[in-house]
Length: 212
Ligand code: ATP
Picture (spheres, rainbow, N blue to C red):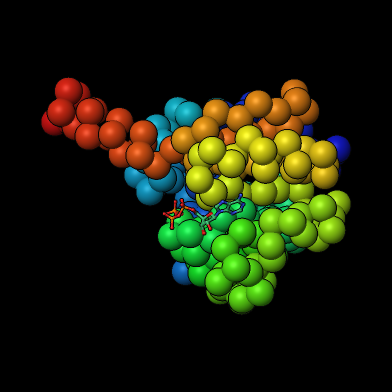
């Protein structure tokens, strides 16, 4: 992100990709402006939060006019570095890893998985979704500075060991899909997505906090 960009709160930053995707669709359909109520309905964020978020971007909606779609889009594009593709490495070409490789985020995102690693000899040397699969032994040789992000879809018991090697290699962020809690130095960001826990929690909320 460029230094000229205003500093925006983390909670706001997390909503940016959501806004961006919706605005891109609006733009594609030829819409020039959008109200916070319309946006709110589409992205399921309340209008007050949207207005506050957008005020950080210097986008002040006008009453009865709404927000200028082009202005917002160019702001998001700059802020999210849409012109710059971030390369990602994936570890563990199992069921989940294979799904990510086939999906590869490229349709609506600025990230691209460029290589994958596994230890299974039947997978090493193949390509999945056009992405080459290397042996984990090659991690240090293959993973270079241009790849700041790793996705972990390996069994939990090897997650920390791989993480330590990634840290040594200068990785900056890890998207951890294993149930393992990872220890990393402070300057490394880990986002943890435990699908089983997310699903259980949804079921729990459905049972205990039913919506109207
Ligand atoms: P998933 O959990 O994605 O559904 P799965 O059930 O097919 O996968 P897992 O046992 O979870 O299989 O393993 C995921 C993948 O991680 C497999 O392809 C496996 O070969 C690979 N794997 C196992 N150990 C390592 C390791 N040390 N480094 C890299 N990959 C590994």
